[in-house]
Length: 203
Image (cartoon, rainbow, N blue to C red; front, side, top):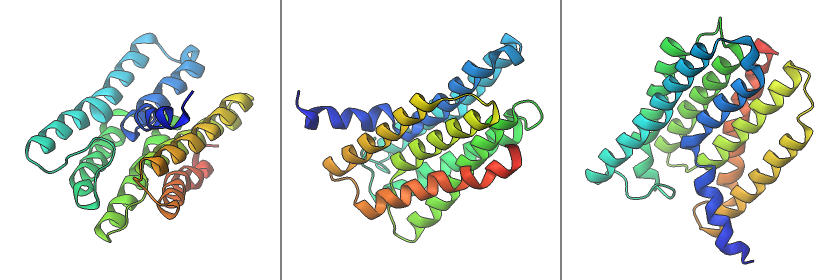
């Protein structure tokens, strides 16, 4: 088995555009007994539209306009518009869709994602290219760890799996020459930092 052929796959599986869906699905997987099915479906539909379908639609629009050229390896100049759009959509999600009163844990997960988007947008303006992939998977890992603490559920194997996946994603980005070590570390800090900071408000 050629690991070099497998590594790029992780850049697609854990593309940051899918992280919100992964987080929402996992959240409702362990809390489904606390909600009506209609609540779960409506929330998942809203999350899917605002964090997956609209960003993908905007990606194809930007690509047709020549604003971006790659789904996984955008340059610094190509990142500004997609990241700005993602930040706006996350703001809409936490402002009008995901309520702190009903799904507090999920609300703070997306709030952390919004903060990460704003920070990485600022870094792009300053011409620094932090890894969006590492931002996404580190935020997801911190969210799962937070849920483990909040609900007193020992997700030891799952958390270990997420950490292994972080390593595989980092290796993938290095293999594809999309990032440097510093950019990967910056991505981890930008992704995990807001999530850890917000623990105090829901743990």
